[in-house]
Amino acid sequence: EEILKDEPKGDSAERAPIVTVMGHVDHGKTSILDAIRETKSLESEAGGITQHIGASRVVYNDNTIVFLDTPGHEAFTEMRARGAHVTDISILVVAADDGVMPQTVEAINHAKSADVPIIVAINKMDKPEANPDRVKQELTEHNLVSEEWGGDTICVPVSAISKDGIDELLEMVTLVSEMNELQAYPENTGKGTVIEAKLEKGRGPVATVLVEDGSLNVGDAVLCGNTFGNVRAMVSDIGKRINKATPVTPVEILGLEDIPNAGDTFQVVPDEKQARQIAEQKKEKEREEKLRKNQA
Ligand code: GDP
Image 1 (tube, rainbow, N blue to C red):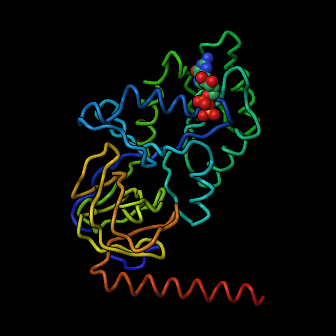
Image 2 (tube, rainbow, N blue to C red):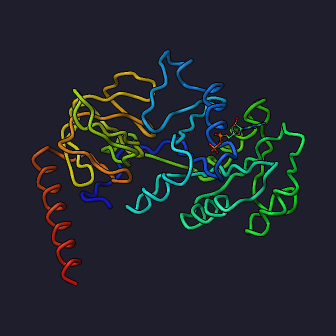
């Protein structure tokens, strides 16, 4: 939730979609993410090297797409538990030789309850046993009817190994993103969500955040979950030191007092003193709630 409301400043601009890859174990989530990164990584254009900070950008036909690196449901469960809504589009990976499995159904339910559009990637099409029609049939049992069958679920046959269909998949992501008209106000004060955070030797608390609206600058005072700080440095997903992060840039931020949780929101506040005050109030409130729960 937002602590300090501010009116949108300046003009809105289209922002990149944030995409999560989900599906049953071994259906190829990691392989698809790798295939996408190998071909479309931002690093080749910007001369950096991909860092594992929890999210990364790829460029397809001049469109930037932000992928959350944690395949599976973590991104949904952990973050949604904190009320965060960090995904705009979900790619549901279903192996063409295996079909809909329990974790496929779980993924469908996660996406549906978060009201996130699903694009189905029918993977492992290179296998002789691949049976995409069976996958589509099984999906109808979960109310996902493919476009070819008169429904509105986009299904893209792909192979993470041969990379066939990867371009089409990204094309569909861009299409759905455009339909959803994702906007941000780059001139606003920065806000977004924590993707992951840890304590690092010599660096202190390090949090990867997604700047979803406004801009985050080195030197900004931020409130981040129950903690706060002054942004001392920022490192992008391609390992570059940056001074300003606009929507939607994944960045590591240094300078927080403590380690926030994945799914926490962050926002820029006027000064560190105010950040400290609000953070302490939030901590106090949390303590009281815990006490009340224990007494009940
Ligand atoms: P995850 O658990 O969903 O992340 O699945 P992985 O990406 O780890 O893939 C599981 C296994 O399936 C690995 O052995 C991959 O090499 C294999 N695999 C993934 N995609 C494909 C594909 O398109 N074709 C074939 N033949 N194998 C694949």
